[in-house]
Image (tube, rainbow, N blue to C red):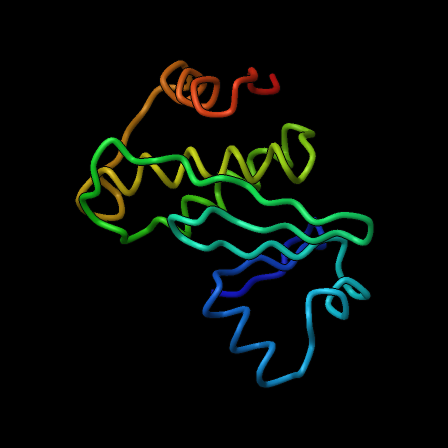
Length: 134
């Protein structure tokens, strides 16, 4: 689902973005006139963030195994919003979303995943080389 959040960002997957682009003729630059950021998830190719002054490519976190893609986009959104709630910038928030998405991709079913904050933090640090914001 393409969504606008209370953080004034547009967030969706690449298929949703392309459909909106085709139907409205709006590119990310035009969408940024109404939003602080446009974030497009691209599956195993990570995500792209556009802001008024930059474009960022965020790597996907490789899953240990691929079990079921159900819920992966929702997990990315949840992680991204958690990052914003922690006061992180868009890049770090998307990285948090990528870690959350990987955990969900590794499990069967959209609600069967579990992890501790310590596991999550360790995985974030292993992949992105920095610690999570507190």
